[in-house]
Image (tube, one colour):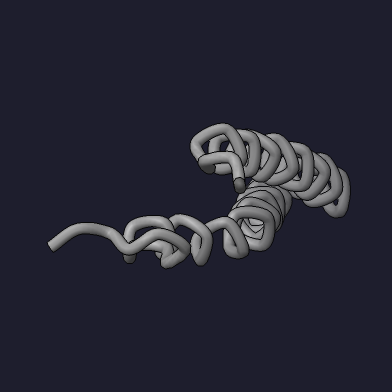
Length: 78
């Protein structure tokens, strides 16, 4: 059973679906780590801000890598 032209396969759909979760999940991890470290070290709100910014930067970098990979693997349209 082959892949029909013009119809994306399930693997491609799963990869595209996960791209939408990359940025919010990176930000959430940064927020959680910063909040936890601030509570533990008593440095509020500095580590929360730093780790949130690191989460945003990490999410954008991961998002651009995933999009670049998807666009590179996509066959040119005729």
